[in-house]
Length: 171
Image (cartoon, rainbow, N blue to C red):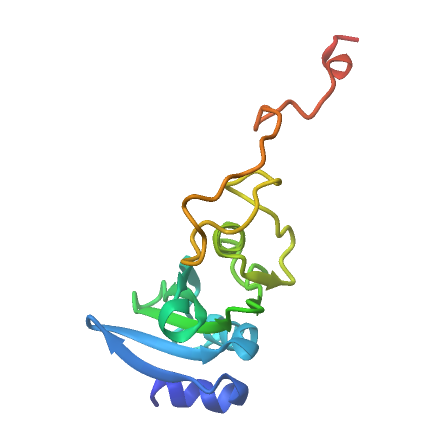
């Protein structure tokens, strides 16, 4: 059975469509059903896609006024690879987090949040990962101006010692 048909039967809200791109399979799903669709793909009995190799975002605002969240999956059993794409609206970019399905999604989701402003609902620690907290905007959006100035902040150690010096003294 084709993967799109199988997924549509298991998760009807996903409305999955499969195409090919450079010889690889691409599965497009609805963002509202992303969590259920990814859970199904992870737990398939015959060929589970049990590895999330990459998670990123693509700004398609210039042509389609959307962001695409792109997941690169792999079945460790067969080596089969699958690209899954879910489109989110530019004005309210929200999608369910898959960090509870694949732990490797944690940093990819944080990076997409930081660089594009996509909100991953249910993420355990959704905060900036590359930029400082006071940074305004999302620099990988096509609408972000390269001339934009950022607020000056006091320099601080990014890997500061979390323990006060008194805790380090011998007893």
